[in-house]
Length: 349
Image 1 (cartoon, rainbow, N blue to C red):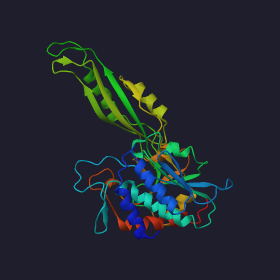
Image 2 (cartoon, helix red, strand yellow):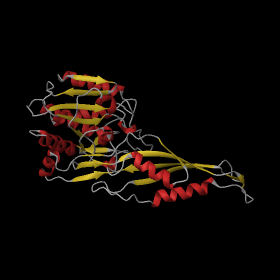
Image 3 (cartoon, one colour):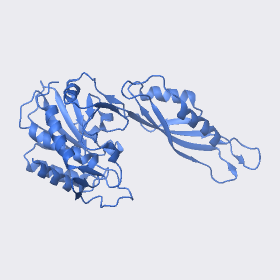
Image 4 (cartoon, rainbow, N blue to C red):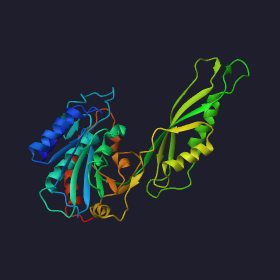
């Protein structure tokens, strides 16, 4: 696959809408594309996977993963989000940066590596529903695969390697009071009670700090209360976005919140774990030998659903993700293909 083929593929992918949970047409296209290349393509739901070689149970297994879904386009797009637009070296379009550039770069590296002999099994797996952490995405894909020893997750990181990633717990909270007339000294204002808990979320510092991911971060992002101006509200609902590190489990963080807050607290899910890898792992050492940096990521990917060693690295810039007029630069894809091949060719894990 030469670079012109890769760029053409990227532009065709952008032109096929694949909002999370609506990826079937794009999965159909990729399935046919892989079959035409002679790859042993398999599919579960809208997830696709292929083995580079016949599986050997005596070898470790590496998974190359990225996602084919996108967020919905923002109203502020000035270009057509589903029509790949090339201006100079930039290609604009929804998903160009997050994460179709990683998809096509990993496909090119996989195509190269499947023609070589390696000391590991290699699987390319493209997942759906990543942007919404859907249960029919990578979790469903992993049920079809053998034990994975290492995953390379393609996301826009500027080819720096995330060796750890924060987990997520969204919690819905309800503060309770007692209704009354606002003109008199009646009732107990649930908003004021909620404010106390919101201030605690803002100010509390979890004592254990991760050497890569820093501290647990709690951010209140939504609030709802009141029915009319002259009634003291008896409930106030608010939602907190909690980003976890490898120092605490979801259950431990939840226990601390419940011990310190007066509101009722219910987590929406405790599936999305903090993830990471030993910094002495061979893939990290290989990456560092290429004079590239490592970091801990505050944003989340399908790594959160991978109960094995994983890293996140790919072309593009995370700051462009989910923005209007998202783009990727052609040279970023060229560099990513060369990077993935150099990272993986001859790697011993």
